[in-house]
Amino acid sequence: MTTDHQDTDTTILDTDVLVVGAGPAGLMLATELRLGGAEVVVVDQRPGPTTESRASTLHARTMEILDSRGLLDELGTPPCEPRGHFGGVPLDLTLPSSHPGQWKVAQTRTEELLQRRAAVLGADLRRRHQLLSLEAKNEGAGRDEAGRDEAGRGGVGRGGVEAEAIGPYGPVRIRAGYLVGCDGEDSTVRRLVRAPFPGRDAARELLRADVSGVEVADRRFQRLEHGLAIAATREGVTRVMVHEFGRPAAERDGAEPDFAEVTDVWKRVTGEDISQGTPLWVNAFGDANRQLAHYRHGRVLFAGDAAHRQMPSGGQALNLGVQDAFNLGWKLAAVVRGSAGEDLLDTYHSERHTVGRQVLANIRAQVELLLGGPEVEPARALLTELVALDGVREHLAGMISGLGIRYDVAGPEIHSDEHPLLGRRLPDAWLAPAEGGVRRRTTELLRTGRGLLLSLDGDGAPALRAMAAPWSDRVAFVADRPAADGPLPAGQALLVRPDGYVAWAGSGPAGLARALTRWFGTLAADD
Image (cartoon, rainbow, N blue to C red; front, side, top):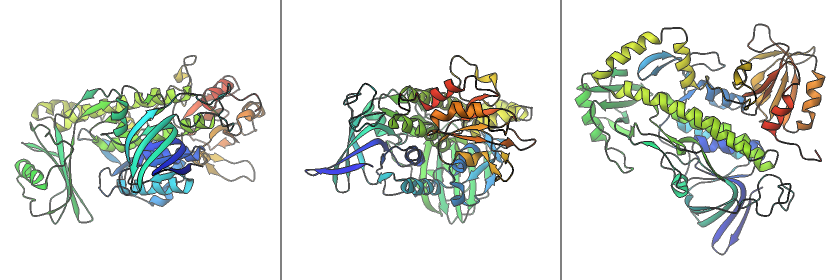
């Protein structure tokens, strides 16, 4: 476990991974690291989960992720809205999924849920801690030829990164094998590393406020002569968002707008006076669009808004960050444990940087449609026609929901299109049990956070079982038949990564050993 001791007035912590930031991305990463067997310390400046109602949407893929870790029961049954939008143009987000549509869950609840799970799994969460400095130490120091440290532990030795923080009881020095910046769009980690962050700053912005004591008609992306107005009332609180056409983003230097600014712009756009209301929360978000050139800088990695900055159009920002963390967690844990080489971390960058680039591109397109003036009306009219065509709606909904992601898992020797499920998420489907067995869903098989070799021919696939046996500590073997008329290919087998994506598919053992090695590591001589 993480070690903690005093050196004069400084608390010293030794751990495998230091996560900076306890938002949704940082907390999801902490749960996945602990599930994978890595020690983790999380530091965050805030005293607790956010009390601001920033993001309020969980998309289908994020809901599937929470389901795959057994976390949905705590959420109950949140409201689900199948209708979303693309740049304010209505868009049906329904796609094949266990949780289609968009689910209304306040960011506070998401953080509380993930914080509880991280604590149960043993993550060391340090609130009111501010990161001051970090330094990458000598790679490989104290390691033998097999890459193991003095205690015989594989993966990384202690002290890969050393960070200084200040906590409520004084200075803290944290020595970790890796550090992951999940500390938001104004990331301290990114600044300290001086990581290139190309893109553009905000030119336009939406003003947003949660207000009580007003009566405003609900509006869904209402385009008026002078701007865009949005309003929705839930439990007596009205969220208003407004943009005045042609009005540039203000230079705020980290400060939020005051309520008077929101009411002035709202009145100019809608003609309505909401100044008698009581503001509960006010902020502005611009159309800045930036992405790190590299998600990995040696022993320092980035996830969530620390890796990409974008307008949260369609609720994509929080979901993108959680999915970054879900991709990284099991990989970093495997490297820390010594069961995989550091090249596995390079697949985090290649996979999630590509997804991030695609999401930022669709958000830029949406911003033009949302915040552009009368000049964008022809494009909006055309898009409205296009979304009615076969394949267009599905493509856009797949981007926004995360259900359309397909990773290049096969490597340079194999084309990912050789099997329709290769690189895609494992479908949630019922398995027909053998006689006397228990009926179960594929999603339930992912709850342990291990890999999965799923044989769908029902006979136990002895050749596959034997081939995968040396990886049995990392990959569970399950033999079942798929339910009739389901999405799974009967008579075949699927190798599924801990994050639920199919890394190999086939009806025989060809290529399986290579896939096992690539994703679950080379076996030690005594394994």
